[in-house]
Image (cartoon, rainbow, N blue to C red; front, side):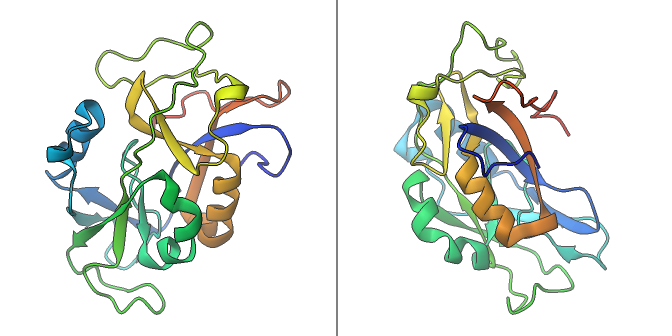
Length: 206
């Protein structure tokens, strides 16, 4: 991961790191979350999501198992440790999963050991003149530039009006998550105000 401990503002996309971890495939309830992100309707606010585990049954479950751009999922362990820091970005809702073989240390191996954070804040902080246009099919912005004075640095995560289905993370939150998640997490630099740092060429790809 690009160093996020400097004083320069930086924004990231987070996803599970490739490795011997099981990742989570979210069920049809993901559609309701996507509608919520697009419309903002309270009727589409999910109360829970369902998911199934992907990968070798002998591998352990990742503690950041979802690669969907707008659906960050955390183990309850990590969510509990960071609740005070993450809560301003939106509520947690349970993710109900099938049994998945080896359990995380101390998690009891239940089917409700994960939560999804519904990232609510939509902040007008993108420099649209310097950013690439959102893709028609997904809304993804390959090359994003942010206005430093408008980046909501006090929030762990936020979204932008031009791409409401994508969650962006501030550098300080990425550092805290990396401390707890280690190799489970991949952080792709989307933008930095430091001109000497190169963003990931395809932050929303796999």
